[in-house]
Length: 418
Image (cartoon, helix red, strand yellow):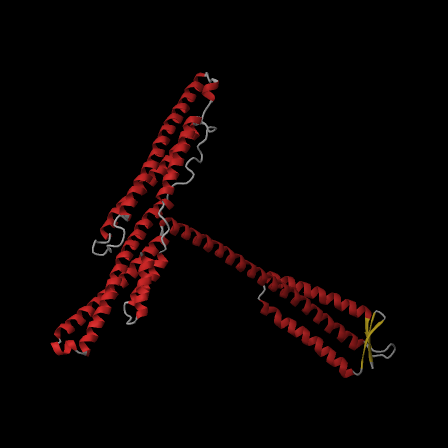
């Protein structure tokens, strides 16, 4: 039995010398693994040098402590010096190696954690930037009326598919007519003639309903296109026209605010002119009298209504622009008067009163309110482009049917489109 003592305390008892040898081998293996794994962690020269110094210090301290207080073997047995020295050296080497490896491993873990945090911050920053870009793109698309233009394009594509289906059905009707005309009297009076006439009548009924749907849909699609122009314009109108205009501001500040608002109004009025030109170009696509069903309202002139709305908007905001010009001139004149009076040293209480006069400001607010009222009156009613597209799609599908259900579908689509 081999006893291991440390400063008078019995730590453990080994059964044989072989157990002591195995303990020494285990401690040596720990030292070897620590020495082998340390370079794999990829620490820098400074970290390696610090870990080496700490490991050597730990090994030296452990060696001194074990030599001073550890004894391997029974007291008075003799021969305990060599196993004590061997175990002390093995413990010191293992302790120093494990300490250095722990320091390097902690540094590597810290670096990986810092790199992960940096990547996470970069991802969050990238997501924030991407979100801001998407929001800006969404705002720009809304400002430019991208959603309205998409609705118009979808409605026009559905109308084109309906026209193609009608053209195909019309060709089929003509072919049936030609075949019926080619029959002799006996064949025309027989079963084949009856079947051809029934087919011709069915196709004719569908053609009539399809053309009525086409006329109503053409008007609806045109109203949608005209409405998109006006609604896009209204999205671009200047907001908060009286912001920065107050009676408390000095003359120079009031003049700058009035001129900035006037510049915004000039841009909007120029946009009104561009919309008027686009509306004039759109007039060429108005449904022809042949496309419009006689049962529909002939006075439903979407183009004329849009022109009247644009004129009302231009007049209302033009009046606001003229009022702002007067305000800017008066504010500038008052600022000049103040400058002259200040230079002469004769600033009176009346000259100190700067900013926009209360009467002018109230007149401007009244004109802005009238302009907003004109905007509300000119705002087109919401048109359900999705419902129009669905109805046209069902119509195109029903034109190819050969039963009563297809006729019912055409009648339902006609009611929805009209």
